[in-house]
Length: 305
Ligand code: PSU
Ligand code: MN
Image (tube, rainbow, N blue to C red; front, side, top):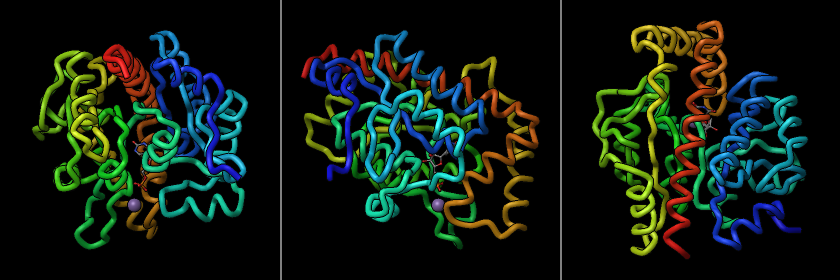
């Protein structure tokens, strides 16, 4: 049995060198509540189409990686939510052998995107080095994947649930270019700034596309991270969100939550504490990333095969 299948519309777009944008399914099942998760996932696909791209939401159905899920399949991921296992690289063989459903994280979405030949992937935030990693060793497999798999990931930086300076250090060690879309500061998801300087500010889409192409021509393995700040009107005050994050982390520690449960717990708790305000910001930054990511992919395709 084949381990992945590509939606015919996606396959055709790839064959014709048209922009295809991968999207993850853990953000649907574990990152947002139902029904906002499904509404957001379908609207993101719509935005990609409006910008002239073809969306490919990726998830695992009956053990097979599906590159380009149908709206019905997306709805199913949203409804079943956390009942679907969150699948990172280490979980893939078990899920495939058991013919289970699985929600793909940034790491696994990159794996299937790469198998299918999809070069651009839009999401909200990536996993990274967790606070306290010096004792827990909790470093997301997303960083490892960025170090090895050639997919360009467009995100709004990483949430301050993580240790952002350590996350940048690990990305540097793994040789991952971290670029800012018209900024030279790492955006921190809900806020446009973090005080941390990154490698390079991309001036426009052509500039970004040229860097993706140059890395390919150098024959370097691994991905590229393009960080795109949340639009000003949707960003949250840093002091407010920092206090909420501190509280959520404290509750997580008190409950003894560890490993792969950490990120979903924190995302849900932050949304609860802010009464949905953080969720609204989260949704808007994904929309913004979809527009920028599709324009980057278009500029890349214009460079030819
Ligand atoms: N960060 C977010 N939203 C998310 C995630 C991270 O702001 O939805 C999800 C992504 O799927 C990411 C995963 O790949 O959590 C990282 O999980 P972990 O920290 O367990 O590696
Ligand atoms: Mn982890």
